[in-house]
Amino acid sequence: MRIGASQPHDKLEALREMRVIAIDGPAGSGKSSVAQALAARLGLEYLDTGAMYRAVTFAVLRAGGDPSDSGFTAAVARTIDVRVTGERVLVDGVDATVEIRSPSVDRAVSVVAANAEVRAEMVARQREWARRRDGGVVEGRDIGTVVFPEADLKVYLKADPDVRALRRARQSGALDHTAEAGAVESVAADLARRDTIDSTRQAGPLSVASDAVVIDTTEKTFDETIEQILGLV
Ligand code: DC
Image (cartoon, rainbow, N blue to C red; front, side, top):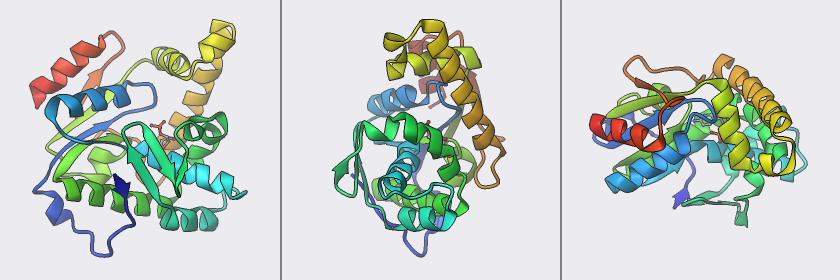
């Protein structure tokens, strides 16, 4: 799957015909695993839009650029070739599956994702991705609010910050290396910092669409969440 460069005449009209399920929420709310499982159950393709912002960040850092240099970062976003196949992410032909999840990308990605020109380019590519497939399950922060305001179903997943930090620490393997409390604390601090930047930025901030179904996954098992969303579908 190639997430190609934007089309000049990207029309929201065409998007109305498609079947899009939008899954939004903060890091650690369970979005990725829920979106992947839903896509598999429904026979739809899945797009992790966070991986796209991470890919741009990786490319900027690899080029020795400063992610807060908005002109340079926007130029990288417009020219980068991003291919996502399942979990695998190729950036300009280089396998960056592991690197896009590295601490250096974690630190810089919110600044890149707050860049309005980067967002315009990524949003256009996300719409093009869905148009080519007649829809899909798309996961991110602004999917129901900005990218697909006409999505058939919008789900906003949330969870208590402590639970989100614990999930992220487990995912990244941080608990294998450090004393448990310390590892979770540092992940929690990073999540809180990113939540603030993601929800207070001007362009496409993390927010709940007025017609989204909000699901709190704090006390829910994975299967309970999936069944609840399938019930909505
Ligand atoms: O979901 P994630 O942690 O991989 O997302 C990485 C960053 O990208 C995070 O800071 C939020 C941002 N992001 C965004 O701004 N818009 C999206 N649609 C998806 C992710």
